[in-house]
Image (cartoon, rainbow over all chains, first blue to last red; front, side):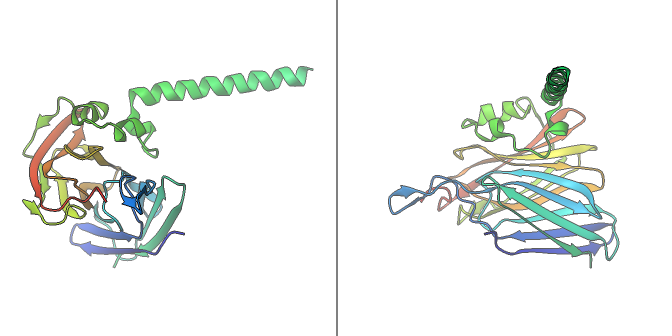
Length: 102
Length: 156
């Protein structure tokens, strides 16, 4: 069950700053709990869309920290633009959320 | 009977199209496979193999690739890195941590409208070089910094 996600998108002069926080264990598959390896469980793909257009496609591995935080920048933009970010992990779980540029 | 033959021909045509798409994918993986996960590159255990698998084995060192990392990371589980490429036409940025069990950490493809910039937190098992590879116009440009880790973030 994917946890909450948060986006903050702010217009900063000639670019828009997009910050996203995702709740995910990002298990490496190398950590042991009670003597047993915890299976790898991590986000593999992140997609960032602005007003329905894909601007960034990310591929991530188990080496991204737990509860990943990313910052991206897009050229220009205006207040009210719709920013949509989604992720899919190696178990096929996914989540997405959206926010308006402030 | 004829119906069955049509079905077979149709599926044969579909397979052919798929093969063609795959062949195109091999030539230009960054475009065709952007939405997938490059398993072969992410599973490489050796830094040289990882660089080779993303086509960056002879990347040129460039001061136009900016990489901001802490000199000393107290906690290897959360190492903040900030990357910006000033190489004109940068299409993608990859992050490679030499001494991690799987060096390739992440890859970001930037489409029209995005600036080649990203900030994220990564895990480091031990002190290591971090390389950032920017791809522009079919060429690869690299920046490298060393980060010392006091407590590793990959084990248990």
